[in-house]
Every structure is written in structure tokens, then in C-alpha cells.
Image (tube, rainbow, N blue to C red; front, top):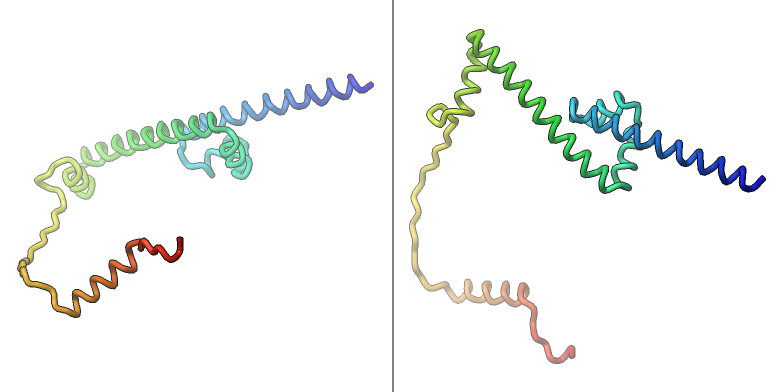
Amino acid sequence: MIKKIIKSSTQKKGLSAVRQEAQKQAMLEQLRHMPIVQIASKKAGMSRTNFYRLRNSDDKFKSAIEEAITEGVEAICDMSESQLISLIKDRNFPAIKLWLQVHNPKYSRKLEISGKVNLVNEEPTEEEKQIIEEALRVALPQNDKSNQ
């Protein structure tokens, strides 16, 4: 009878592991298409809580998740660029402007900063010297022999 119970629980654990592995693979596949955990987990039939629990307990799965998300982001970027190019072909000015700002330095956004710097090489006053000494005393560890 005990052998039967042990065999039954081992089979259940085996089925659970198989089911868990299938869920992991489904989740990775969904992340390759949609790199957003909430959406991917819903489509894969896995709760977000279970996803994060599995991710935190399995380094190999965690690494595979990162790769799948990277692939998914790249796929979305490719699709977005394709749509942007379609808009450019349709003479959509904001699309044209965006493309030029990102891909051509001539049209990139520029920030101009101007100013004047005066370097004065003067000795610090006695008050400034005291402030500096106090700051160094507080910041640097002391070799106090009385504590040894």
C-alpha cells in the first residue's frame, strides 16, 4: 500500500513538473511576441505571482526570460520602424520629423549652453581653512590611539 502511495505521489510530482515546464515554455513564447509580463502571463495561462515565483527560483528560467523579452522588444521595434516608414511614405510630417531627428545629426535636437568661467587663484581665508579642516576631520577616519 505504501509503495502505491509513493508511486502515486511521484507520478503527480512528475506531472506537475511537466505541466510547470509547459507553462514556462508557453510564457517564454508569449514574451517573444509581447514583452509585457502581465499580457504574456495572461495569454500563457499563468498567474503573474506564479511567474515571478518560478523566475526567482530558477536561474535558467530567469535567463531565458531576459532573452525572450529582448527578442520581444526587438520584434516590436522592427514592427514600429516598419509602421513609421509606412507613415513617411504617406507624407506624414511628424513621422518624417521623428525619423530625421533620430537618424540625421543635421536635424537632431540641440541644446546650446553658454557662459563664462572666471578662475580665481586666491588663498582661502582663515574661516574657509577652518571649514575645510572641519570637513576633512569629519569625513576622514582618525587614527585615535586612545580607542585601541
